[in-house]
Structure formats: C-alpha cells, structure tokens
Image (cartoon, rainbow, N blue to C red; front, side):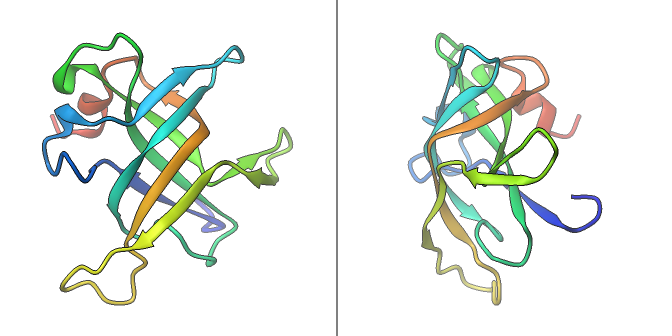
Length: 138
C-alpha cells in the first residue's frame, strides 16, 4: 500500500445499521490457522472495487462469536480482495466481491460500492472486541 501498488478501504457501515455500528451483523469465525472467516455486507465503500491497483485491502468491522452486544463487541480485521501468497505476490480471489455500485449524491468518479464478504479470509487487527476503539479517535 505504501508504494501505491495496492489500495485500501474502511468497511464499517451496514444497510440496517447506518451509523449505529453497535448493531452490525458481519461476523468473524475463527479458523484453525489463526485467521478468520469474514461473512457479511458493507455499504458506502468508496473505491471498494476497481482495477487501478493489484489488490484492495479492506479494513472490516465484524463481530466474533460470543462477543458482547453493542460497540464493545466489535473487532477489526484486515481482509484483502485477493489472497496474498507467502512471497507477497497476489494470489486467488478471497471471496470479496462488489454487490453493486452506490448512487450517492455529490460523489463523482468514485466506485462507491456495496461489498459482500462470503467467508473471506481476514486477520485480526488489535485485541478482540476492541475494533471500534482501534478505528475511532481518542
């Protein structure tokens, strides 16, 4: 991302939740290898899909099994559009797809998308159930 070869997004909002992140439904299921299976839908994702870079790295808020209700139970994950091989090269699709392009007033020439995560592999950023505080200003 630093060299501009890849881009990134923040995937926070869900259609039923709006700005109330405490009621998000996107879930993260732990996998045996230490990664997580991310499943859910996010809306209003600016530059969520394009072919301008070799990969898009999505930062996604999701809920782990047994997490506390509300914002205290949200965790933060990094979910690449394409898997990343051990040598750093781009691999196969990671089950992250654009469901549709949003029609937002005031934004032109930006692929603002609905993004679907269908068992995509993700990696926890920071401690469990502290994702909201990790991505929020102090």
